[in-house]
Amino acid sequence: ERRSAVQTIAERAGSLGRLVEQLLLGSRAGADQLTVSNGEFDLAGLLRGAAVAFRPLSERHTLTADIPADLPCAHGDMTATDVIVGQLLENAFKYSPDGGAVTVRARPSGEWIEVVVEDEGIGIAPGDHERIFERFVQGEAGDRRRFGGIGLGLYIVRQLARAQGGDVVASSRPGGGTRMRLRLPCSAATS
Image 1 (cartoon, rainbow, N blue to C red):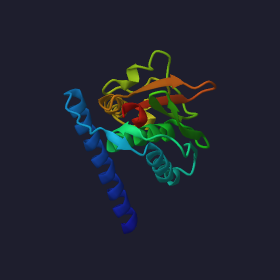
Image 2 (cartoon, one colour):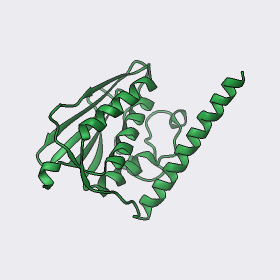
Image 3 (cartoon, rainbow, N blue to C red):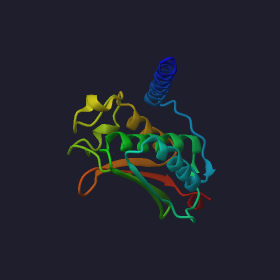
């Protein structure tokens, strides 16, 4: 019983820490004070690491990573990109039903590298594809209270992507679910 109470306290402290971190990032983003470094980094390694880290977090979902071995390096901020990918994967797991598939894949596309995170979840209501990137906004699909959060995650994601010279957009997946597309500059194109 005591161990359970300690675990609950630790989980609550972790949740509070993440909330404070999101509020600070959201505040900096809103004041145009996000600072990122720009350099070459191994995006393929980052994506594979994120997939490995997220798999054990949800035994109720299937995570597939399709990352080519020869994916070029990205040009941007590795830490900021890790925050972006983590938030996109967290949302995909959060909004997907038990047994749902989450896919992360990456491909070079001209001067860009595109990272796509797809889920089989509740999707995004028509008209909300841009609105979900605003501060303190969550999509209107489904019962938002069931999923928690304060509506800063995707706002921060977009601000971090744009600070690196990239962007992130949302679309509905054919057959249901959400497709999030992150574009980052390809290092070879910036050399």
